[in-house]
Image 1 (cartoon, rainbow, N blue to C red):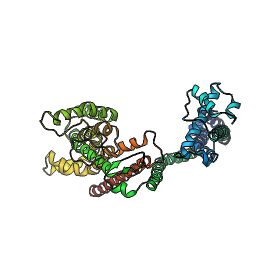
Image 2 (image 1 turned 30 degrees about the vertical axis):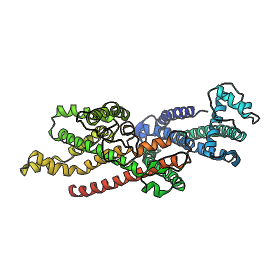
Image 3 (image 1 turned 90 degrees about the horizontal axis):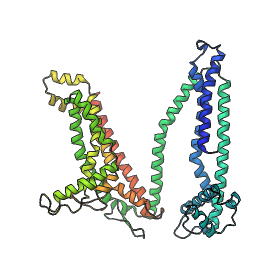
Image 4 (image 1 turned 180 degrees about the vertical axis):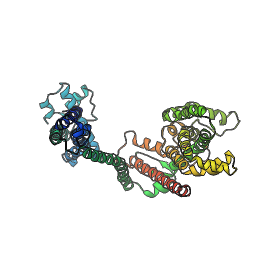
Length: 490
């Protein structure tokens, strides 16, 4: 049974359980809610949650674990001689999945019978041609071991789907009967429901932590594989980025790190002053009508997709800078030869970051107690002196957080630098020259037809882990600053 139908059945039984549980509780109290320990809705929620939570948890766990378990089981069926030179088990398993999906499509469309799809006496070239007729393309003739593994993959997937259906339906019925039969006027339904909600909230809070741990571990393991194939000294201390998928690549992070930091600094030089001044004006000087109009208008910038900013940098702002600073331009100098440059990407990215700085800074400035302002005015300070010497120092922890958020966005931005900064990995001090960043190289190395097990592809994970460590360091520094100033103003 498809998972969607299972989910719909569970939801329907859960909804019915809510009303039936509520009705049973009222019936046990003679129709009077005053005789119940808890409100009637709690009894219905207890039955609904008893049906819903176990079934959905099993569905979620099964969806995550089933592909891993089936693939690991099927991979054992692939003999070592079936893995061609220059290939690996992951690539062979991708062929297995394509063949299995193609057989499913062929059976569904009536091109093959279920018995034909399950037999191993099929010529590889003939099977390739048959699947090609229905739009399933295979790269080469299907090896017998790949076909056997694909059929085992289909069989195990079908058996797992049947087992999932049986388990989920059994849990649904058991959960309904267990909670419905113990529903009576003396049952402490509110306590049970509130404990259950607490557990769900704790689980939701744990998802972010577990996701972060999973991301970090995946990067660490792949980075370990990379350093097993490529020198770590060249990666951290080399000066050249020159990937070559035929081998002998120079994969130094330093030119990419230079471009990332250079463009990010330019972006922050634009975003921080403009955003902070805008926040001070909106919170301290602007009238209510002006604030109600200007702040939403400013925050529209945050909702514009980054690809639009990239197009603006490529089509409009980059050519504008080229006309100003290029050969024969407005200033009569030849400092810029291409519309793509550090300044193009940095300034446009700074415009994108303005609402992040201004909105958060405005909120934290407004949170400074009015009593601090009144005390400053009472001592004879002017409005500007109060802002500079009282309001901004008190709001500094929040402002640091806003700047950190902007810096993280700048370091991790991809589309703007792809379209506005170019793709040249080098050390250059001229902001009107093209550079590239870590994020653009990660995208470049993970796209294409390169071998996933090659150092030229695995370097993307080493770059990602390095970027993660850099942003983590920024967070630790900001946390130190926040705590330092928070002690002074608590």
